[in-house]
Length: 406
Image (cartoon, rainbow, N blue to C red; front, side):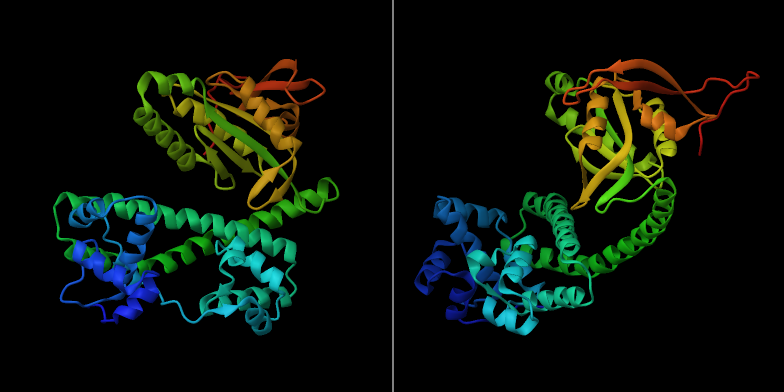
């Protein structure tokens, strides 16, 4: 469906560019306006052109980019609700019952720096009203701030991935085919309009599945923590695992960045595909993956099996420790986490190295055995740490093979 026409003055307001400059850009061929018809899409593209001009790009560069379809952006304006009237923080505070400083802090966490803009729109206000409802229901502010930060960080990654993948697999092929800029914008608009309706239901479905699973895990973990001792507020008992690729820097120098990136992708995908259900990838940093699990047994068994499965060069290595850590913003912090990170640095390629805390938690195992390597000095820790190499038992007492679990 074609965009509804807007006036030149309305296009100027949307784009933040004067009417005379807009007309000059149309004549220069950097804004694809046909027959003098201004639309929200054209105004949005003018806003992007203004940003590019501020960054020093010439009109001839922009004209070439438009001709090649690299500035086919404005179609997104019709896919999202239009920005409604602005409200000051004072008005927002009066409507929501939240303090101005808290509104500013919440909006900053959500990625809208009202400290700079100074205003909110109706959509912002509705979000603040939802937040106010949660606080009035008794949810602690300190926990809500962390939750909003995790939401924002996670959804920011989702949005970036959507845009990057759409560009790589939709926009770039259209550019290579030489599609006219306006036709390209219409085609991309249609594809995006078909994609957007499945996004929210799919995220809600995934969220509910994981939420149910982690609620059950939390009940089990809470019970076990009560059995072994008093819980500490903000701290959780977990097995912390780091996995990385030995000699990865040298491999990158020898094989090149693209081959190294392909290897990391295969490595991370294999980790994701093989992890036990209760384990979770907290983050990946280059060739390193941080994993947590409430169950050190299945995590260590997985690590041993994973190293046997992933036989590419350079070899992975694993370090595991069990202890209590501070949970904040979806991540884990503290000396116990640092210890696990130091342990992996002492492992060789193809080794799973664990601490005595892990060995004690596992106890007798039909699948695992542990070779002590003695007390080892680890950077940042005043006392030597007892370390063990975990490996699969080759045979039981009567010579039968022991199968890996699951």
